[in-house]
Image 1 (tube, helix red, strand yellow):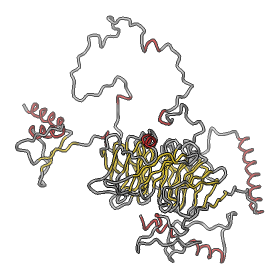
Image 2: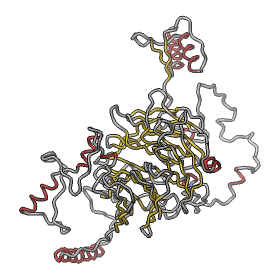
Image 3: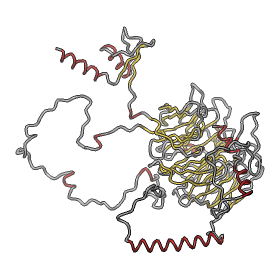
Image 4: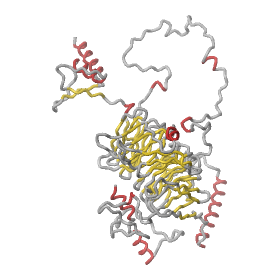
Length: 592
């Protein structure tokens, strides 16, 4: 009798493993009975029936791990991160920092693959080329640079008269770069001949313009502060189509950003009225000039009226993520339906700076307080993927033993005919050719890019190297040591003579834009207070005395390129200069 009651109690607990019932009013948690369990099931199945005596109960279901997005760790870039972007395949993540460095992460190993000392001032925008070999960056000192990712060298520099809000490579031609200066019309650079073209705008008096290439770079979409969208032909800059984004009335709203999906023809527009509008690019081109297209979806936070800092599509273009400008919160919508799928909350009190969705995986990277946070799905083990004949059961099933199951040889088994899979075993299987991955190919491509840069080589750091028993023979070691000694002697003589191998100096081109004010300050460096941004002083910025006296990150003092320590009054002079922090970095830390 006791065993039967114990078994009945165990099975009742197994049936209730997904549900827990909490009584309102601060009472303790109770084990649900039969009535409570049925009441919880009716709620979870969408039925509107209530138990008569359990009206004060709430049924809670455990969140299924398949649909849960959780924080999957952070990436510490040593300095404060400001912007990030994935390469085309999602294998490398480039992060721009407030000290001017670009940190490239190997996203599979979550380790730093390369650090490029790119700028002196904070990096505000980054973009990868299509093949991944080049990287274009913009800093708050109005300089746009192109970098070789493998060598870390700067190929070209462009100096603009006003701060840069965005840089973007042409999706198919890495010789063209789209630049969005502040209080200026967008500029398209041609890197081969260092020429530039200023794109036409709708209103010369309104130069708060944002721009973006479409998915294949055939057209450039621009939007101004009056809600006017222009579609320009990339090659000729001719106006192809235009329309105006309006609110519920005839009032217009300013365009904050334009983002395109990696797949499909959809794009989104983030506007100042806190609504994200999703359009179909084909419909825009069909409507032509002064058209009136209707958005496919209008996404917004009706409860909190949240303004959006950054919006982007998922890798397949089916979802849209938007980062709040008030807090570290990410809102995810489904594009086809327009329903809010998930809200991801970061640390309370932090401000969001940038959001990037992985190109081929359900992973989101966000930046707040100088740290890159990674959001990913909690993976669940699927045993049926390892054993094809494995079958998952929701409940116990009685197994009926076959009569010949444990026989050494099945006498009743008939010889099957070779059809289907058995007949295919005689065919030759090609194991040498590599099929292209569909996720890495565009709809108009059949093969992958053979020259693409997917990963960066990393030399492992060995703390205590041991003798290699499988190394080269002693004769080869002695020869290599003699060669190394001779080469080191040559290097020593070269350093004594002061002659270093000449390093290629990047070409700097000044971009002249008419009617653009030269005293504008980048929004990242804006100082809140009297409502006016402080003008950035020319030359080395002055900082408060004694702030970095005890800083553990002081750089070592070297004399020129010889690597000799400074002495005497020169050392004191350089120390005095290095003890003054950059105002750009200080403003960033105050903002965050």
